[in-house]
Structure formats: structure tokens, C-alpha cells
Amino acid sequence: MKVLVDRRDGLTAAADVSVSGVFERGEKETSFPRALADEDTASAGVVRAAWDRKEIRGKRKELTVVHRPNGKGRLLLIGLGPRGRYDAEVARRAAAEAVKGLKGKGARTVGFRLATFVTDTTPSEAVARALVDGAVLGSYEFLRYKSSNDGGVEESTIHLGDDLAREESGLRKAVQEETSIADCVVWTRDIANLPADTATPEQLAEEARALGKEFGLKVTVFDEKKLAEMHCGGLLAVGGGSAHPPRMIVLEYGGGARRGRTVAVVGKGITFDSGGISIKPAASMAEMKFDKSGAVAVLGILRAAATLKVAPRVIGVMACAENLPSGTAYRPGDVARTYNGKTIEVLNTDAEGRVVLSDALGYVVAQYRPDEVIDLATLTGAQVVALGDDTAGLVATDEKLAAGLLAASKATGEPIWRMPLTDFHRELVKSDIADVRNSVELPVAGMLTAAAFLETFVGGTAWAHLDIAGAARTTSTTRRYQPAYQNAGATAFGVRLVTRYLMDAPRS
Image (cartoon, rainbow, N blue to C red; front, side):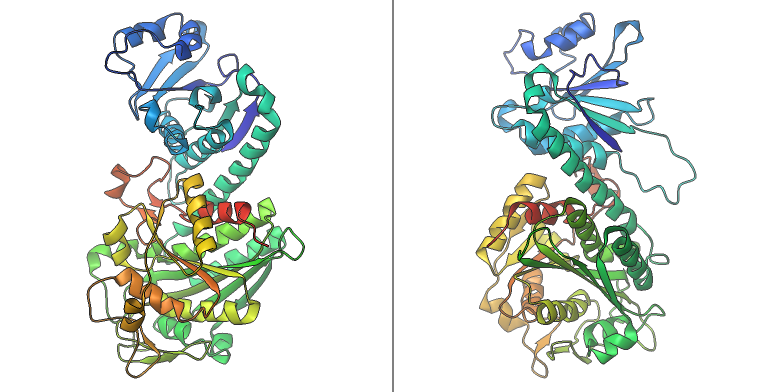
């Protein structure tokens, strides 16, 4: 979607639809709000009449369309709910609801009247960024395999009007940045939504090479022969049952600041997870094409970092394999030796994500000595049990890193919740015959024992683990209660979050 900024008020511009935010009216509120005076004038009194008849209440998700006289387009009034509960996330959702509501209704261009979404506690820049997110991400559809398209909004404009025209320079910069990030999210979703017969480990390597060529990133791909030479036994074990051999893919962005810090971003890239010999139930298996979401998010983060020229040097590592049962698949009871020499007792072949990440984490820490490591992985069903489908679990060994990610979460609306990691969890993953085991006998704290396993491979490096098992995708069930900007399928969760962290949290 094309996104523009216009100094003019949206009601004087030529968009097909002009969108205004409306706050919820109080129970005893009867007078017509001054904030809707311009909309009422533009509609020749129709808006006031609808308000008086209580057809407009301002409740969340309420959409009211009014046709302007003389064929001058339409007004869309979107409910924002109570003013006291309003924030940028409400604006983000409202923008997505607006563009979704206009799909297939002949609206190619939409103008958002920014001033109607701004309050004393929610400033113009935060709202402008949120409107961009909502409009771009809310209009997304995965259309690669569709033979027809109903059509939707193709262009959105943030209209400043007289009240905000003095902030034009800063708002243009904010809109441009946020549009770039949202475009990276859309690009990431397109890859994450690909089925396993297309998005193989080899194909993800090709996507990385193409990205590197486009943005001047150094890209290194380790195939199965090189992985064997490097003693990456985790990747080789998990990928051993597939005709598509594993790959470890490394992307390097040099950074926009001299002598800046180095941040490593590591992603789990299981292109299809059958569970291996510990096979999954058939009912849930179709969704396992999304088990590559962490690695694909790494691609999106590197694209965003290079586009925006963020200050830190960023190293992206994608641990990619397909987990299938076959005569060459790894088995429960096997022991795998990883890149940094530590050994893993395999007790469950469906706990494969932590096994491939062991090589990637060990490699990036040893080879690049990063100041910080952030990993993203659709790692455990326990994360969904603990936090639901929208909130990712955060485990961190460094307070500044955790605080920076939590601040980025608040700014982007990608929710994370910090969870504890204690010696209890570390004891549970110790093995009798190897250094660690990939599964434990207690059916509790599964997200945290997985994190304790991963911690083994980062040493003393500042580290944050994001378990995105629920947040990485939506289903026909979860779509009913998730935000309108999270469309069916892959969400590319983590791209906006980590990119914002890289932009906002520099360290000396």
C-alpha cells in the first residue's frame, strides 16, 4: 500500500473515503460533539442527525459510512471507545478495521484525519505511526494462490490539517519510517505463509541471498556438508529425515554507527514440523508450515535494519530444517553433539526447535561475540497455554535488554510478557548421559525449561528469548478476537518489535 502525508484537511482532499475517529459518548451525553462539526458540515447535517438518533455512539469497532452530497465521496466514522481507555493501539486497530470494512466497496484511496485520533495523552507521532501500521497491515492478504481478488484500499493518506501542519517535518519522517517497517512486515508475511513444498530450507537460503543482493548484506549459507564439518549435530539430526537437507543461513548488516554494538538475531526455521518419529496429531499438522516463523522474522528484521540504517551492527542467523520421520530420521534416545561441543540427549523428536537453535546460538556467540543475542522461535505449546495466542513469552538474562524490548513492545503493540528463569528450570534440563536433554518428564513450565535449554548455548552473553508460538500466526478461531491488522495466517510477529528496539535502544 502507498502511504502519503498531506498538509490539507482530509475533508478538503479528494480521497474516496475520509476517515475520522469518534470517541464513545457518555450515557448522559446529549449535546453534539464539537469534534464532529466539520464532518457534519461536509455531510450537510447528516452526521448530526445520525448522532441525535444514536446511530453514532463511538463504540469500539463501530463503522458509520455517510455519503457526502454532490458525489464528493464518503465519510467513515470509526468508533474509538472511551477516551479514558484510548491509546495508540486503539488507533492502530481502528485503521485496520476501516480499511477492512471498505474492502470490495469501491474505495481505492482513503484519507485519515489525524487530528481526530490525537489526544493529550496520545501524541501525533505515535498516532500517525499507528495509523500507518493499521492501514498497511490491515489491508494485507496472502494472494499468491488466489485466482481472484475483490480489491481493496491501495493508497492511504495521513492528513494533518491546520492543527498539525506545523509538525509536518517530524510527521513525514515518522510516516516514512513506519511505512518502511510495515512494508517489511508484509514482505515477511508473504514468505512465512508459503507452504512447505515451496519454502524449503534451500528456498529460504535463496530468499536470504536475494535480500543480501538487494540491500548489500553479506550472506553465508552453510549446507549439510559444511554443517557436518562444523559439527552442527543439532541441525543435522533434526533435518536428517527429510529429502530437503538443513541449512544455517547467516546475514550481516554492518551498522549505521561507527563502533556501534553488535546485536545477533537468531530464528528457528523449521519449514515443516511433523514432530518426526514423535509424530504430531494429524489435526494440527497443517499449521506446522508456520514453524519457520522465527527464522523468517529474522529476514524481515534484517531487511528493516538495512532499509532504515539502524545504528547497531546486526547479525541474523536462521537455523532451517524440515522435521520428518523416515529411515534416516533422528530417534528418541539419540545423542547429538552441537557446534560448541555440548551434547544433547534427545528424548522427544518433536522438541526439535531448541535442538536446531543450539547450533545457531553457539555459532553466533563464538564467531561474532555479539553484545546481545535475541532469538525468536515458535518453540512451545506451553507458551500458548501460559499467555494465549497474542502475547509472546520473554525470557532474558539482561535487565537493559529486557527493558528495551518491553518498551518496544509498548510502542509497537506487539505484546510480550516477561517470564522467570530459575535454577529449578536449569536443573530440569540436565541429562544423565549428556550435557542437556531436550525434554523433561514433568508436564509443567515447558516454556521455561525450553528457555533453560537454550541458555546453555549462549554462555554469559546478554540474551533474550522470545517464544512466539501463539503470536506467529492466526487461525480461523483466533482471528475472531485478534486485532484486525493480524490477518489470516502468518503475522510476522517480532519484526516491528525488534526493529523498534534496534532503533530506540542504543547502548554505549
